[in-house]
Length: 156
Image 1 (cartoon, rainbow, N blue to C red):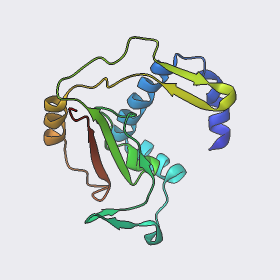
Image 2 (cartoon, helix red, strand yellow):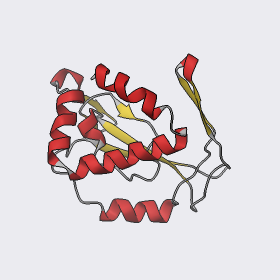
Image 3 (cartoon, rainbow, N blue to C red):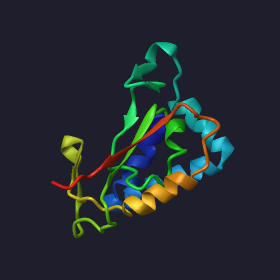
């Protein structure tokens, strides 16, 4: 897999960071719709072991690797992330009303430090829209134990 990333990295790094992020979400949506891509991602990134499973707060986590809040803020590619090896997904931060977040540019690469500065703010569709999306989202058959967590922004 590292050879694939080394081939793609120069192309990805020519893109605006926020555009690359949107493409990653679109890739997740595509993987969800395509069974052969799901199998390929599971072969490349998936790992299953009962030793990694966790039971915390009455919830079963298939493994401790999670996709942090801020990446898939609106839960647009929920079914894809388990194919990439994630045991849970945290969406959000979700605000009461949808908002655009900070003005652009707001996402910066620090290539030499292998880091990203994220000043996106809380851009999201809003609590009602995301709740509606989750309520109408088809239940996953392949990954019934992959958890979806929401990170709400509460008022002070």
